[in-house]
Length: 104
Image (tube, rainbow, N blue to C red; front, side, top):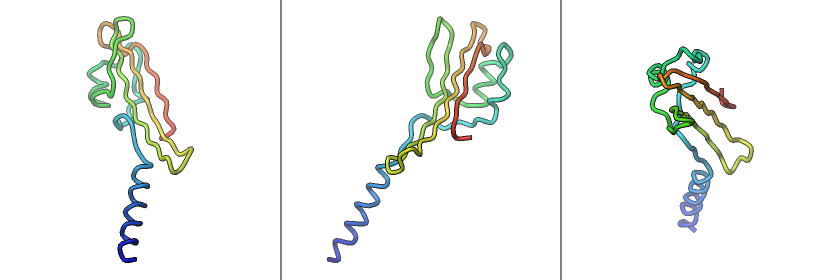
């Protein structure tokens, strides 16, 4: 009986920890409103948000994605996410961007 209590507690903790997780890399979103198409540089974006979670190319131009998602399997419907996608032009200036979040 004495072994059952610690074993039950360990199982409970394992289930709780296994039910939570995250994807991506959290990033500060305070400067999102300062981004301006045709004005903000790639260097400024790097200073404000750090290294992107994903980097790619669209039509020959750099595309950076900042993404952070959290989830909890034990509490269905309690997912949080934020994503900032930035397309740069050939001069490394923001051509277009999109930000979506249910965390702020």
